[in-house]
Image (cartoon, rainbow, N blue to C red; front, side, top):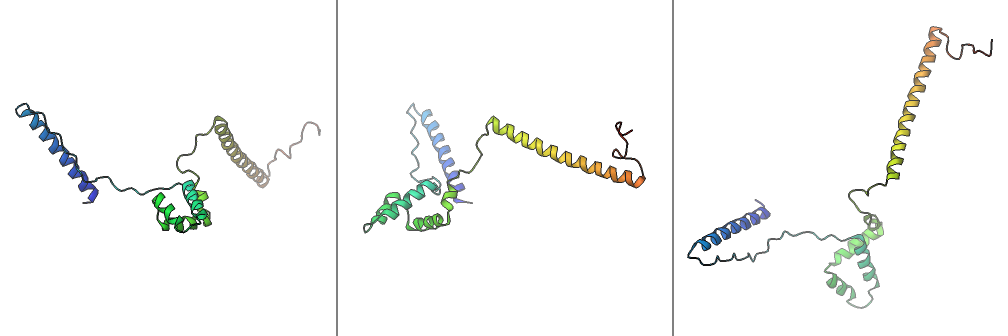
Length: 163
């Protein structure tokens, strides 16, 4: 069983026990119920820190400007960072990854009515182009079939002006 599940079980057991003790205290001789003592143990699950691209770049700029002895160490202590953060972020900056991180992930921004209309028109245009190509192919096959069977085609028929 994971430590997170154990902590949740212990916390729920303590809450149940505190609730039962509170009810028992109310029922006994009219004395006020004893308040449940909070658990002094830290139950919060550790969460990794996430740094934005702008923050990383600003820290790197400050580190690059640091000139005095121990200035970078003071910066790292003030920002609660490690030197490995700086070296990793410098590598990312050189590779151009920090600029790519500046773009937000997740859902795309809502499109404007004009953008929706353009998208619909483009989809309709591609559909009509596909149908036109299919119609041209069918007409070409019909012409070849008429030629094979010796039937007159629309191009072979005389028009009213030629008579």
